[in-house]
Image (cartoon, rainbow over all chains, first blue to last red; front, side, top):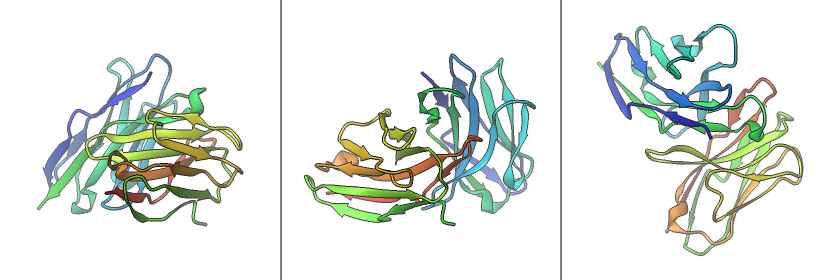
Length: 115
Length: 111
């Protein structure tokens, strides 16, 4: 069974500072990985996804993530955050075949950007 | 082009009442999912449907039933609501390139 661990429930950061949101996964098979963002009272929006190929994945709004198979990690980074990045971020994993291709989510990281 | 549409957006139920949460897609994808979101627990899968006419249990199916009568619609039913089912419910579908699209959610309160 898959599991996803987001190591930080809350991350405060000042505007224009860099940020890293950590995500570790466990899976006995190959895995697809995703980062989603949720703004208050809204649904989930895809930031980026890793299916195969280059381990550095670039997404929307200046975010990027790096797939590290040896460390089973998929950390999300942004070099300079903005107030508008304040939101909750979810890491998720999915198996490429079988099992309905369902997503397993982490518990989320609340990013709070302060002036 | 709305993508995934959920109704209602808000609902308050009394314990023991029943209701159906509706989800419809206009994206012609086979796979659809129902998740619930609770504080500090992320999203947990309730049921999913890999294709029209098929459904399977997810991580937290107890107290729920689903119906996938056609490709477009995937409904979630609470037969006898309990306070533990107070949550935000999200419907989603999946494209062949593993692009998942989520609806805007239904906020359900059971009192």
